[in-house]
Image 1: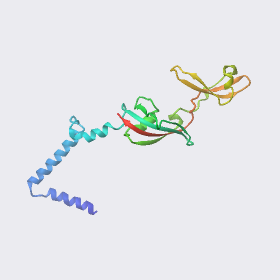
Image 2: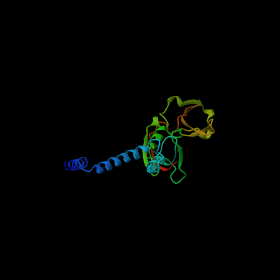
Image 3: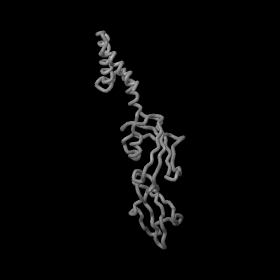
Image 4: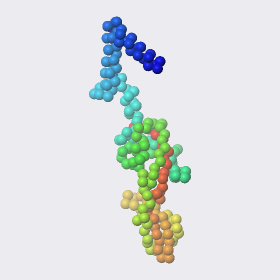
Length: 198
């Protein structure tokens, strides 16, 4: 209560001052403050006095900016499955869908040096396990050295990459292959650190 009384007493002193020049000075200060603040967000936002505001905006991750990111990926049980720590950071153009949308959203607003932990459900990562992705083929189509459950074959995709296929089941003359992504159905944790924003 005392703090409010102190503020009120100061307000009364200013409002009730006998000096017209004091009131004029106060109005001038208020007008300068309003003009200076608004110019940083209006047509005069390049005003040199707005440098600090501009710097804070420039180094913040927004859509269209490039962010260099260090990351480590874990399964739900804590098993580490990927990391680029100690290597070149991943450069992401935010909003270009280079990474999962949920990761892009998590990066927005961060600055160089910021760290963030993000948990992704299967639907936000490599998707759920799809039963239609299990295909039965003749066992002869599987090379001899891969004719066991859990074996991983690689086939080339149209983009020139290699897509892994897992041997799910083997019968007498048939094999069931799993075309789901190896991380389908998995919840993932990403530990990220922003190295640079530009």
